[in-house]
Amino acid sequence: MTEGPSQPHNPGPEGYGYPGPGGYGHPAPGDQQSFGPAYGYPPQQPQRPQEPDWSALADRTQAGNRRRRKLLFIGGGVLGAAAIAGIVATAVIATGHHNQPQPGPTGQATGSAQPTPTTSFPAVTPPPPPNPLAIISSAKKDTAPITPDNLFPGARVTIQGRTYDKATTDTTSTCSDVAAGGLGTVLADNGCRRMLRATYTRGGVAVTVGVAVFDTKAAADAANNQARGYVQPLSGGGVAAFCHGVACRMSSNSIGRYAYFTTAGLAGGGALTSADTAALQAGNDVSTFAFNEIVQRGRDQAATSGQNG
Image (cartoon, rainbow, N blue to C red; front, side):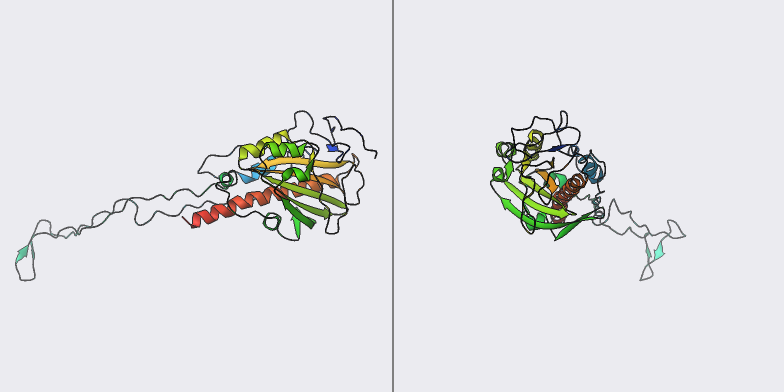
């Protein structure tokens, strides 16, 4: 395909564009969540102590195809109250002869038995466990190390029976270096601290996911809302250059203080057509995987925080 001037802000109903020097597609009017497949916003942060409905949140991140993998709901079991709740009733020794003295050890009459002193404990309710979404929404709380290995674990990922092999990963603190078509400026303007990328392949399709890390949820949401352009496809690990100057599919979304982007196309470097569905599915699946791994960071840190009291 011959490279030319940047394409207008309208990818059409199919949601694919042209990366590289020739320009790239943009989200359709009214669709602030995607460049290619339509993605929905995650819901606003729920109020503690209730934990977010991860299943509903995952569904809304891919409103285009409505086929999110249901996330496990993390239990926030509350420990039982410490010691004895309430006031312990005083035990009273009763006999069949009311108000009659009983003989003591020396044969002398004694008064009725006195109540045994007891100790009562107030009811104690432990604080609710930390909210995973609150943790991953702030750099002050989300303090666990973040590397390509722990964000993109394993040699492959399986989403609803579809398996993708991980080809290669990288990371940079200069987010604009691995973004194009205007996305680099958006990331820099909103304070992107780091970009981590990974490329996955399946059946002749390659997809790169880039996770941009910000200090706050507000910054990540702003970058997602303003997103244009695309994350540059990452070749290596047996995957040749792809999505350069040809039609490919793109997506954008955010959760917590993370914005994540996908660029999906033919692994051989060819152009997609509007009838293609494999790249669309690959972009959706790898985006789902990124969402799950970011949420898992919050779960892991919430569990650790709860154990540490």
